[in-house]
Image 1: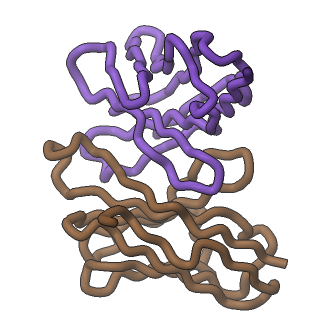
Image 2 (image 1 turned 180 degrees about the horizontal axis):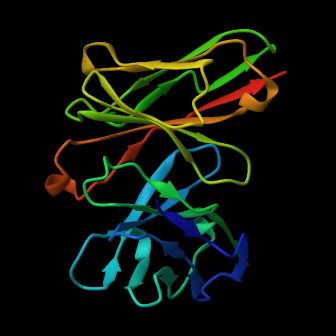
Length: 114
Length: 117
């Protein structure tokens, strides 16, 4: 079984500042890793994913994440946030061949302030 | 719009009533998933289909819940004798069968928000 921990439930940040949203996972097998974003009253949209290869992955809207196998982490970063980045961010994992069933963390609310 | 479509977007029902939600996946996607999301939590897996076959059900899916996907196209999720604890956002997602094609990406609909009063 897999589990995902997002320790920060809320992250306030000023516009144009950098941000990091933390994600740690636990799994006895290798996993694919994802970050999804959810705007109010909307479904989830994929930001980026790590399947294999380079541990630094780039996604949409200027976000990137780095996979660290030894620390079982997949932290999300953006060098300069915008007001429009205010949303809930979810980290998720699925084992390869595991039916695409995603296990999500509890989410991090990113609030960008002027 | 070729994304995942869910109807209705909102549903308010009285405790004890039955409700049914519909999900239309992306047309070429063989796999369809249902998730439930309560306030302050991440989505939790309920069940998934490959074509018309329901391959896995979570223990969260009590016997009051039933899901179908006739003909492997749209899917319905029915909740019988609703309880206040069923209040949540119900999300549908779809993905292609082949992991090699998209790397296991799931595309989500906007969800159906259920409120049981």
